Length: 150
Image (tube, rainbow, N blue to C red; front, top):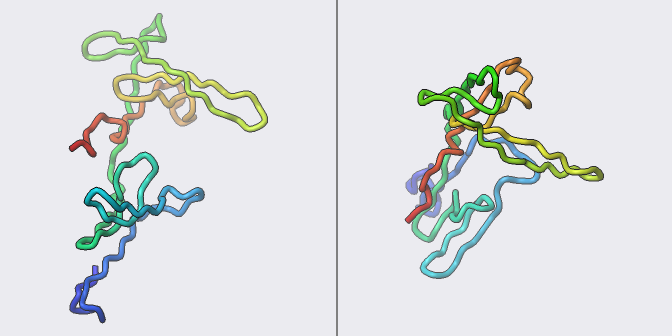
C-alpha cells in the first residue's frame, strides 16, 4: 500500500502479491460486475460468487496467501476382519464410498472408488509414502462453512 501523500494523484495505490504460483490455465478470471448497486472490478475464481481481489469506486482490496497449516493426516485403524470398517471413539464405522470418474483422452474413463472416513478422504492408494497404513487427509477447505452466506 502506498499512501496518497506519496502519489502524484494524491490517491493511495494498492499492490497485491498473493504468493501463488503462476499456472496455465489460470485460476483467476477478470470480471467487472455492474448493476443492482454493485460496481466492482477485479479477479474471481469460477464458482465463487464474489470478486476475490479488486476495487470499487471507494475501496480496493486484496489478500496474501498465508501458507497456513490447513491439512492434517490421520492413520485410520481398520477392522481386522472387515476392511470396510474403521475405528472411531464411538466404535466401528463404515467408510463412505463414492466413485470418482477420471476422463482420459483417447481411452476409457478410469473409475476410482474414493473411501472417506470422518477425517476425510483416504489417500493411501495414491500416496506411496503411506506404506501399509490407511491414511486419511483432513483439509480445512472441505469442512462445511457458510463463508458467503448473507
